[in-house]
Image (tube, rainbow, N blue to C red; front, side, top):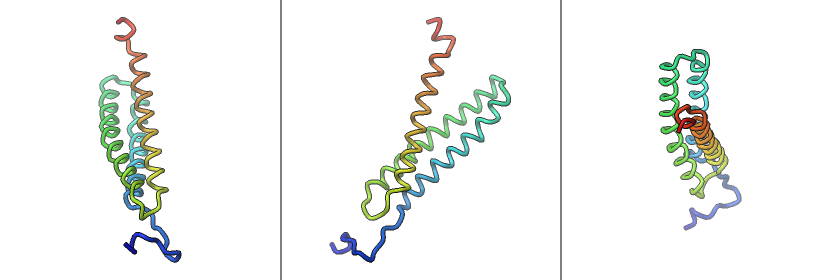
Length: 115
């Protein structure tokens, strides 16, 4: 029970789960930039599909892992929350970007216009 009560001399350390969530989200940002630069330079349809599929896999792997780690780090009471908040924010921005990209793709699709 005394372990749960923090004394004045003790300082909370950063959450390892929060740091991991932040690293996962930042690595996803870097990898997405690496993936999209070649896709913009070469506008071949087949290459564009391959790059888009790799980006989608990155989204669907990094978002659940990053969000899960961030939420878990925020629930824990024994550590600081800053990296968990940063990881959660970046992953939620990813979700927003994914939804906007999906909606824009549906709007610009020639099949939808003729529907």
